[in-house]
Image (cartoon, rainbow, N blue to C red; front, top):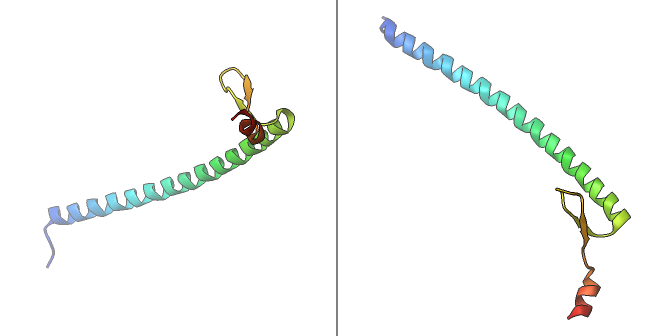
Length: 82
């Protein structure tokens, strides 16, 4: 005994779609892993640049639009102002 042809075709189509979805999930997982790795590297580079700038200029806030900066007052200076 067999199920009807239309029923078998529905089951086969669903199985095909499941396979495609699982394939896409695998690709997305790989892309997420790659992007997380790239983000981690970028954060490490940014930290290094911040440390280099701090060594050269002291503690500053940089305006990313024009490159200007403001010196961040040290804690001791803040206490003296009170």
